Length: 231
Length: 393
Ligand SMILES: Nc1ncnc2c1ncn2[C@@H]1O[C@H](COP(=O)(O)OP(=O)(O)OP(=O)(O)O)[C@@H](O)[C@H]1O
Ligand SMILES: [Mg+2]
Image: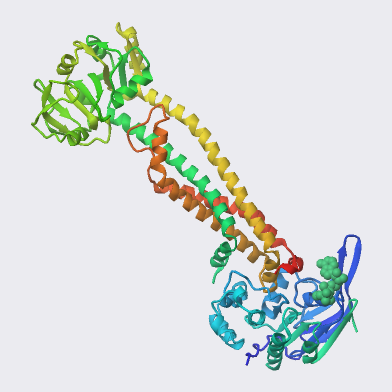
């Protein structure tokens, strides 16, 4: 069983995400793209949420804002109680490093690093030494025997498990995943889905963006986006 | 895993590119090392050559003064001669402490080895203060003082009666063997001045006079006095310190050229490294976005690429120094064939400070070359970086 995240420093009663009139406008030349248009929603601690909607609806944009990868154009966004919209890049980096774990569709493993090194990479950025944690996580994703392999020696499902272990290494408050099963076949996707479910059951807040019906239906709640608006 | 190994591991991604970049840096640093070592070795070599000679002024027959000095220093047959009577005038010139007469001639034997005979009198000992003689200085007729290299090559020992190489029918007794001087004296055969003059059929003639001054700073004055004496028109007075300075400045002008080449090589290598790392940044844009998502800050990204540049330059510089040292004998042989005058000492040899300077230059080069790519990488916005060429990962 994946270990539950450490108890939060912030009050457990606060929602992990609180968005009010959240708007993100991109500029493509002179054209304005409202990727997110006054989206208002909450995600409670320990929830397992799927963000769904057609292509171009703003799902990735939303996930990037939740992960403090980008600043909203307007509106209010609180992550574990902390207002994000006014933060500097440095402050957002810090928040991301301490509270957020990211999983990507294309796994995003570093090809020159071994499995164990890939998992340990975020601890380098966080200036932590957590050798034991890496072993623990390897065991949890059932890849201890692969620890010294390179990503290209792994199957897609194994790579995504490594990526999930990497996202968990700094004990985040929330796991964000953009199409985590998008590059996997159905059977492999299912093992990833059940891994997310285990993490959720262990108390972690999990937000997945997906087109994949089995994954969406495995979640507790679906947040549907259409043209940048929450339905 | 740490920052250094994180950057190091990236080398394996593009081994060819890494290799080429390393080579560029290595060549530039090798040029720098060779230049510095040569400059140092040449200067030191000239200085010890002067010290070993023990003379401040060389008096030679009218002719090419540079050539004459080179002959006096390294040994050869002279094309022209001085009258012995000039010696007295030189010796009595104001400021002169010792005037040592010499008659020199040289032969090449079948193997190409050179046999240099030098006739001298005891006054030479006032100049050659570094000499250690096993046995004694030639006193009677046909006594020889031989350089250590000669003694070794001919397998001569003290007291031995020997035949003079290249002088058929003539012999002598080894009365003294010179301890190694590391200079040309090691390969000379010294004998009494009269013996040499008779043997080589130039009685009452000299090839050169070595002059030591009472006060080396009084050089100008003494040179003027020597020019002024009645034999002044028949002699060339070569102030050695000046001569060495002239040669040095000749070599310096070449050195300036070489220095410019080394500098250009360094700049080109720096641009090459910068360019290679910039390409890496472009290729790794998406990875940079991922690392930002995993919590890397601006300065973390900067550090990764800056360190990588530094590593390339430092390793390239290290290779350059080692290769330059390994090739130094070849380079030295090549240089000797082209220099107007080369001291007998090794021109290029290992000195730690030069290696340190080269590595410091590599570090400076790497730090500077890494700034642009590291800055480009660090200023990428995480989202933009993540969106870059998504299909390729
Ligand atoms: N950096 C950007 N610059 C300009 N426009 C952008 C940028 N990022 C996203 N957009 C636009 O914003 C809109 C929402 O994009 P987003 O990537 O969030 O959609 P999505 O729901 O994730 O779509 P998909 O399911 O195809 O991944 C799209 O119209 C997209 O073109
Ligand atoms: Mg998307």
